[in-house]
Length: 226
Image: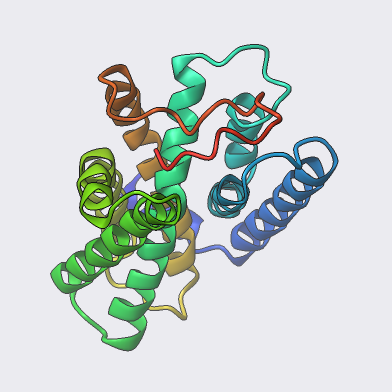
């Protein structure tokens, strides 16, 4: 498929409508499972899973079912990697969406301006998802800043360089009123998630991240910020 054909496909209103329906159904299934079967999961991770499924629909739901429920048969590094990248994805995704809306919709910036603005928002939101819970848990601010930097910087960089690059490649000239603006944002977010997964596996293997705890721990002792 050529670039123009791809952009034409992503500009279809029925495609966006179908995706929104799938995402809504996926979010409903997630919420029902969290309430019925996995109510013990820490509030932070419930937010993480909801945002992950909101951004990536059925794929996000599959990641949750594979790695985020007490029903998983074991807790491998592969599952830890998915929980860890989903945690980063939830904050970065919110930052990316906000950044794109501000850069394109409010400031009408060019490609470089939009890229830098979006990257800045992604880092602020992504860091906040780790720093905030660490401080709330009693970690000193200086220690929390250092831990956040080591845990999230590489992941955010890979995720956002990939996602922003794809988004600008697909929809550099699109405005918020164009269907392509939204469909390319959906596609780019998911590609960024996939690109950052190996980074999280490496960080877990090196002991920098812990994988957000084991969801089979029904006592709620898995509420970590990594």
